[in-house]
Structures are given as C-alpha cells and as structure tokens.
Image 1 (cartoon, rainbow, N blue to C red):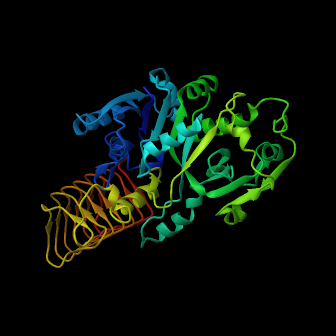
Image 2: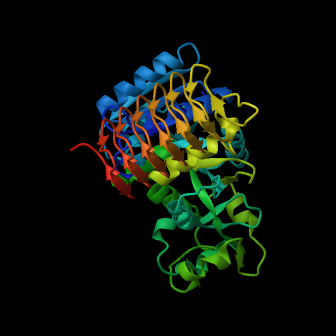
Image 3: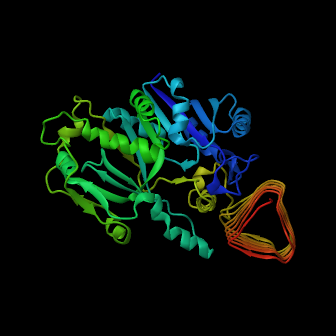
Length: 452
C-alpha cells in the first residue's frame, strides 16, 4: 500500500457555536445544503483515493457522521469512521489511530477543507522530492461581494489566518514557518539558519491549507517522541521544519551549532511590505544542503497551489458565510449543482409568490415556499422553509425547516434548523441556534441567539 488517506473530521467546535451541536456536528454542517464533509469525500473520490480513515471527535458525532457516510457513499468509498476523545487536537487524533497507519506515506486532510486542489498532485510533489512532509500552501481566498458591514471588517482580519513562511529560491522546500496567529511582534530568523541554506524567500501571502503528505515512519516517530504535541500546524510541522536543518551532518559550514545572532523580519504594522515576498541573504541557495539523501535530513517540502485554485477552511462563522456564498457564486464548480440562466439554483418543487425575486448566486432547496414581494440576494435557503410576504434576505444562510413570518429582514446572518422568526423581526449579522424563536418586532444586531 503506497498511500493511506486520513480525514480529520473534528466534532463540535466553539468557534462555530451556536451553528454546531450534538445533533449537527461540524462535519455535517450544511454548505450549500450539502454536509461540509461531502466536499472532501468527493474530492478524494475524484482523485481515485477511496480507502479512507475518518477520525471524528466524540462518540455521538462519529455515529452521525458514520450514518451519513454509509448512506451516501455506499459502493463508492471504503470509509472507516473512528471515534476519538474530544479536544485532543489534530496531532492527538493522528496519535490515536497511529497503529492503523501501515502505508509508506499518509495523506492527511482536514475535514473542513473546501478546495479543488487535487490530492494526487500533492502526492506527486511529495514522492518526487522524497519528503518527510509536504504541506499545501494556498493564496488567501477571495470571497464574493458582501453588503454586510461586518463582512468588510472580517475581511480585513483575514491576514491573521496566514503564515510567515520561508522558502528556498526554487519554492520547493519549506525552511521557516510561523503561524499567523503568533505574529504579534517581530519574527526572528536566525542568521545561522540563513547561512545554512543560503538565500531564503519570506512570504506572508500564503495560508496553510491543512492538507499534508507525510512519510509514515517520520510521522509516527514524531507523534511517539513528542507526546505533548496537539496540533499538526502549530507543533508537528514547525518541529519538522526545524529538525531538517538541525539533523544535518555535524562539522559543516551549514551546521546550526547555536542560535546566537539573528535577523529580524518586521511584522504586524509592517506586514504589508511582505505581502509579496522578500529575499534574505544574497548568497546562492545551497541546493545540496536539502537535496542530499544522507545525514538524516528530513526534507520539508511545499506544494503551492495556483491562484486559480479555490481553498478555504470552515473554521469560523465568517468563513462559513464566505464559503456558502462562494460555492453558489465564484466557486460554483465545487457545488455539483446545475445553475439556471439566472445564475441561481431554485428547486422545481419551490413555490414563489407574486413579485418575489431570487437574485443571482442564490440557492433554494426543495420544498421551500415564499410569499409575495420577497427579495432574496446572495443567500442559501434550505429545505422545507416557510417564508411569508415582504421578507428580505441578504448575504445569509437559512438552514432547513425554518419559518420566517411576514415583514422580516435578515442580513449577514446564519439561521439554523427549525428556527421560527416571528413577523417584522430584524436580524443583522446574527447567528440563531437550532430551534430558537425570534420574537415579533425584535431587532437584533451582531448577536448570537440560542436556547439555554
């Protein structure tokens, strides 16, 4: 067996509260009325990767995910759903199933990833370089237009999801990485590291896609030796990046003997100057340092997806809104749906009242009914919703079995299953948990509403 696939599907998530619950774990959160995990599984299936271990946190979440997978992908994929304890992190999840890994290499995919980057291309890069790990880096996603003011503010925060990465001049090897969440002060890059590798290109315009190819033996060794590591992105990957230089043969000019002397790359206020790239050290890159096969060097490589590729993770409420809007908009090829001549999707079973308009980049699922003079713009409406007259919905996600009475205005919000919104209620930049009742005439802005 050459490659094994592990999907880390998570469980519930505080960052997505109140959207996720015991009844709807993160993996089953609807994206354009499809469970989020289906985007990863379809991608793997299209790449002919059909033997999959799916790791889910929590027994109940695993049961629900297992039921969905077995009913939807029967005869298409061979998926083993494994339950692990909650809140053990991505490295902890891999450690829990480490003994099940027997292939030479392991492809690890985050279950909240929505992308068209082909895993086969990543595997090819990994094999070609004989790498210990190959990480996929993508350009920051550009979401569709948003009328909601909060959308503008949240987009300004997107660089926090990026990394500061150091690459060799061929852009094949990963030489330095700092998580965007850690970039609160100057980023220090040690001069001896630069001396070891020669010229280094510093980039701040790339994000970690949470799609990795690992050498199985190397991965198992790190998980066993570093028992406290919980995160692949924050601990395992940076450790391998550091160790590829430290493990070089001793005594040579490039050996890292100590970490005295350093170069400083300004960040935070000066991060904009790194938005493209910056080269450090004028000397030619010492290709032989990382390309040598001996000396125990663990080569860390990158697969940089082209700007035309879509890559986004469902790791926040803002990201959830962005992805829903993208999948029925600029990234509609990921949805699997056929769009009308009006560039929207309205199921044949939907009933629309007089003078009701459904704009482009909208989706109405089966069985939903809308009254007269409604306006739906850049929004996703779930199954069997009942929407009254004179209702306006903009840049929002409304899940299934939701009742919205006359005269309501909903903007920049997410409304979960079985919610009732009484007449003339106004929601702006809100999240409404499953089964909640929004009272008539109430006005909510930037609130999270959920049953206690």
